Length: 128
Image (cartoon, one colour):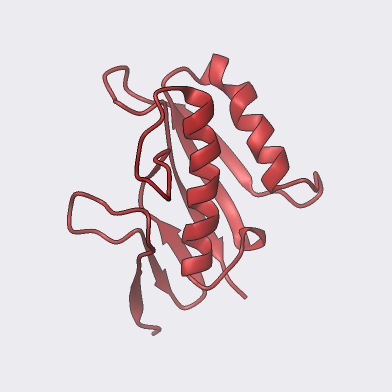
């Protein structure tokens, strides 16, 4: 059995004692990722800014685990208002995954109304 390895990268840290992601063999699973700016750690107040940053965080996380966005097989998103937020999400989605014949699976769920984030996500990647 392959050894589990905690994956962390600069610009994102959880408050609890958990890694940004965990890798066993060629499988990488992220912890929850937010829309904080990876350079400043500031959280934009608007949905569009958080969505832009969350896609930056996804790319940084999968790279820290030894892969690329091409290795991602599924992303789960949680949004305060999935119906109105889908356009912002879809814009960045198509930028990261331009080939309609080669996109990861995706599921979008409702985020609690009292959550300070507009959007969060986690993903699974199979590397190599």
